[in-house]
Length: 605
Image (cartoon, rainbow, N blue to C red; front, side, top):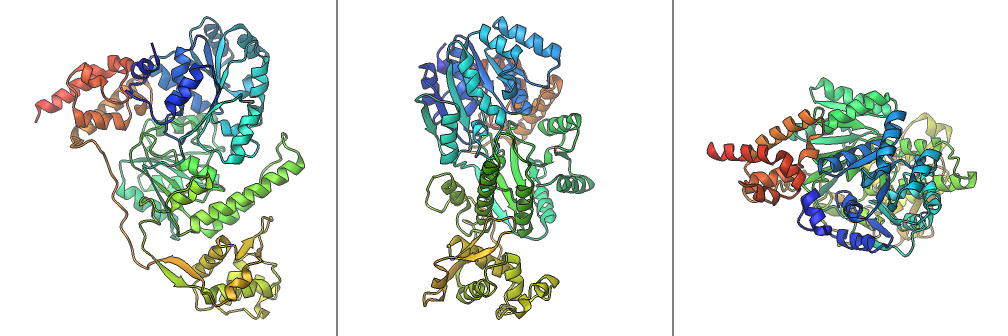
């Protein structure tokens, strides 16, 4: 077989997506590769297709048990022999898997990085032919990445111990230029073929909400989308418990996931989410990496994450099937303080020196600042994220809350001048909250203790709402008229351009008009006249098959495949094989049942 035949037979696709073929061809030619592709762009196929065409075994180094199980389950469903080796296996299961691997049963083996240099695994690796080592979630190898794992640094050492160096491939969805350079060096990639397909996920709608009642926002969204599956991310375990509990009291089928639960409960809750028993998952950022659930229609961040890399990765778990999905961030100023606290509480990392740890914390504070700018900007949200990763667009996407909100230019010169004067008069010693309270004329104990009630600017903006003062301070920081330090307790400071605010040129800031705007309606399907009642029947059949086989429904077929079936209504096996996502193995296994359901629906018309 060639690459195109493998693609169709096992994965059910007629053509490759952007970047896939370039990387596959390079690997088949024995060249290292480095692919930076957004979630849902098909990174896995870039190494799975050549793995099936290469002579020996492909080892895939993967950071999480859930990721391995999901990938191996999907491969086995496609008729490909694959296995994983991690701590979830008993000693007996682990030994048996290694013995079967030695006989050549598996073409693809997923392995945790911690196992690479263990005697038993290393002995196995030295006895078999390893054609390729693939590093999934490659940003974990970078000490400056948001998910650094010291065990990933063992990968290059493992490769050097092999009698023949295999081809090496690395893949990630999130990598700034700094992290890319670190990956290239840490993995010792040799003249790799590098492909960056871009970070834009065009099917995602981005929105930031600053309303005070976050839970009411969640309930309102879920009420409008009752049949959808999604994830609600919270910063702390306590918030996860509170939000999940309140959802359950309102009869919403939700479950939870955080590090405080037992392994058994976490696994059960994850399975309930994957099987759509509890389609709403409330979780900390401990959940999600490697979860290949294709029908996640929304991701809500109940709190602001600490950096754009994490936000992009977590929000990107929506819409993996390419269908329209929504990413909502519920922002409150308190989220900034909570993230600052969490950064300071991070435990020392034995792989880093004290000096390195200080550098990491400074970097994390700067990333938090950029995340805060994202939440407070009036510019295109998509463009903001893309610029962060080094891509530049027109600053208008038409698919984010800012682009669909009508803004007006307002003159904030007097507010800006009062803010800068207050910062100067207090000796640049306080943070945003103290500055805001002083300008508003608050009688708080803290202001009295710091003698800010005696500041000449005290009460100068008593008639200006708190939110507007904070908006202007954020705006002045973005425009570099002010800056906030990266200290444990951030302080507002002046810059060389602060004095420019007092020149004759007015300070103009964009602000949303005080009226509601309807969001652009979602494009539900681009397949012509889809039969929605047939789609529901196919979903029901998929659930029955999934329950019988104890696998998540999306592993049988994705929503996207079902929608295409409901639109095209195939009548023969040959026509069924033309549906995207239907390979020979799945056609043989499920084709008859799905074709019968389609035929029955047609007869009833």
